[in-house]
Length: 516
Image 1: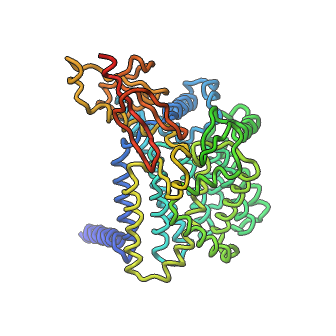
Image 2: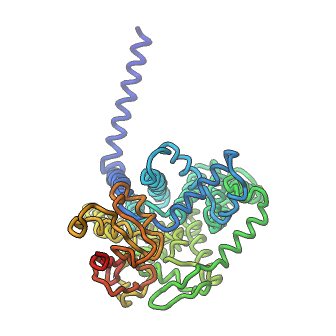
Image 3: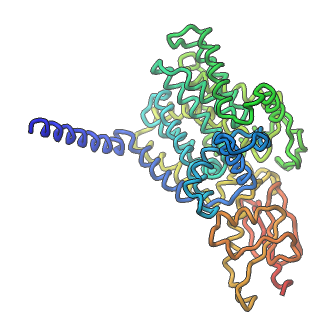
């Protein structure tokens, strides 16, 4: 009886502690403001998984996961994996394995599973930014402010649903710094950051930039091990981690590594792109390319706070290994962009990982600002981030700030991946088809690329009445997307179009009267 009573009492006390802990988390005295934001943000993110169209590379990325999963299981051929040797399967293979839970379901469900996994990983990175901020900032509200700013950049919110390359690589960068921060302050597991950096380098070879400042911290802050051992052991962990999760390099790791370096540095995109009204030819990207894209796509408030934080962070460089990591990552990447002028296109998504030092160094400025304003003003300011995101959600995948208005329409690449195709297809599918036909028949749509077929997958049953045709002469509608700042024109009635800040993202021409 005594044992039973003690067990009952222990369970009761544990239950009370859990309830009190949850209550504390959701109160403003704890982390309530950020917890409420995080929960509502997660709900919004998962509720909008099908809001965005399927981009051109989605099924190619899925194929990478399929081929690597089969090869690892012993069912596939190395030659099939090697076809995509420049693109690591770190996300794609687990995503394809997860798809097997819904193997018998239509492609729409499988795409939503992939997107759900990607957004879950992104949510973890949001929490990672918050935890890093807890170690970096002094004001109790600064970590939440910084994490909210990180999460509410409209373009990142959109791409966190479908960009399994650049956004996933960005998340891996957050995890590297998170692991390093915990290691430094607890004095344990110093090799975790090296391991994550090695794995990140399979997604993009720029993961080496994550690793360089990790080595700096290992050399300058001892973890109960000699510096020279720390240096070489860190390199060994990095290399082994890179190798273990990259099946395409298992047979010839050194040759593969050199080939990947050359591909990343020299591979030009097949067509020109436009920036500030100037056409950039393949392989001839100017040094200011990424910087100008950052200037017109990041919120102006973010940019101003970043420069404030950067100025403040300079005086704290020697005192904080986190700031040292951020400064080194920012410096070597910017130097590489200026000197080497690597191949970039479709905005600055290839270097989205610069958003990590941008936001966290900006948080240093936020930390100092919060100490000079009242508590009530601080709480009111917190509303800015979610409201800002919600106001831009219709066009968050092509968000520009007001500086973009300096240039005339057609001066910047717009919907490169064809994400807006989904909305255009829905627009064509709502008209009364019986008005033009005696019976229900497919709506035939032509577009210059395969975007119609791809986006039928995400529409599910709503896309059953849509048919992709290979010629505009046999189509009922002609869809034109704005990829490079300009639109092809047809001498046809305009059925619908979508305009954002002076730029037309897509136009839908009506050919039904010609087909009758």
